[in-house]
Amino acid sequence: MSRLYVARNTRVAARNLDGEMMIMSGKDSTLFTLNKTATIIWQSADGATPLDEIVERRICPAYEVEPAAALQDAESLARELAAHGILDVSESPIIPANSQPADSHPANPPAGESR
Amino acid sequence: MSGLMQELSNKALALGVPMSVQLDLTYRCNERCVHCYLDHDDHGEMTTAEIKHLLDEMAEAGVFMLTLSGGEIFLRKDFFEILEHARRLTFCIKLKTNAMMIREREAARIRDLGVESIQISIYSHRPEVHDAITLVPGSLKRSVDAIRFLKSQGLKVIIANVLMVQNMQDYEGVRALADELGVESTLDPTVTPMMDGDRSTLNLGVDNTALQRLFRNESLVGDVEEFCAVPPRPGEDELQSLPCSAGHTACYVSPYGDFYPCVQFPLTCGNVRQQRFVDIWRNSEQLKEVRSIRVKDLSGCSQCTHVTNCTRCPGLAYMEGNMRGPSTQDCEKSFARTGIPSVNLQSKKPSVKNLIQIRMQPAGVAVSA
Image 1: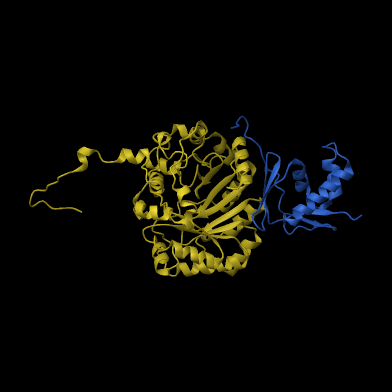
Image 2 (image 1 turned 45 degrees about the vertical axis):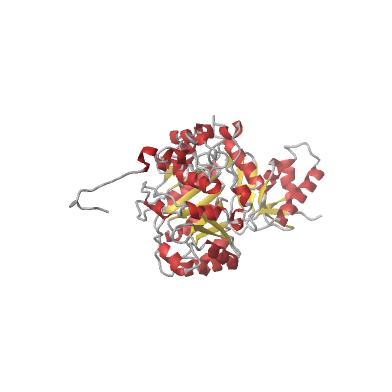
């Protein structure tokens, strides 16, 4: 079975809000949110690391899940995000058009302040 | 606001995250719109390096929606350098511009950089009216040409029209122009005072009769009966709610680094040249005061019939003298919508003893205008 490579589309807007990504499609301004697991995949989607490796290294150690089932879910997610134009998917490594970060800035609550 | 966006805004509010920021890059402008609230001199704009540093801080603080505005943003020679930096930080970017400096090349670059939308001010479909407002001959043609360039690149363009005495006959024409160009359009009947407090621009605002006509135009407001209905009495939830997102999930930074709750709310909360963006956001005493205000705390407004659906702007109220007070322009809108004067308008009615006045002037005394 061929491996799948995933890369964040450089035309989207994205920000991490308390561990969950907010993503605005560059194609049609549709807004998406990713849960914590999907956010891990998004942040790891550098175009160079195969999806199975992302699942093995980042998802399986953190969640009680069968690796095969996790990979299947991850592939469905990747293809769904690709259909919306917010993730690029390929069977060979993807060279990014420019080096856009995943947004590693977590928008966490300011210390001692929660309203 | 869409359901998902509302949900995210609520989450940002609970977490104390500044979801949305307007950053004015310059107050300089190549138009001289008669209703503009800014002076157009450069009093010491932030440098390219300062702005990039600020953008880094904003991203770190969790800002997602970034509006780049002015003045005219394309007058900054480093505009694309700033935009590129902002996009590298994955902001969702909206540009506000008169678009006079956008040609094919700029439009293509904006597309390549993944800008979410471009808002362009158009005041009339007739050059003689639009150009008389911008005070720049040929400005309508240049702005409309730019809209075509941007549309040809597949970009989302929104025409923003401010309704004034000068163009009150033309809003249907602007909407037809927007339809022809295949873009969205918005209409705002609010003319704001100058940032320095000068209120002379308010004389350009349309009168109550024109507002009434506007609010009864089904093509603008949808269900007229519903739009103009007298609102229900407020429940405890409404009285405990926040008057506006300014200072709660949104804020504004001027070209000089001044930090306000909103572009229309010139309460200085700090300066990003002296403090980190996030430190002002978290610790400013002024922002804490703004955040402490609930609808129940608004003097007059909390007892007003219109409190549940009034468009009251806290910034306009602040410029009127009291951030907990009414914004008379919004009182006038509520009156035009429902025919019922607000508590504030009722208090401004002349008293009976002043209703009829006789004034006399002895012969030979000069009259001044």
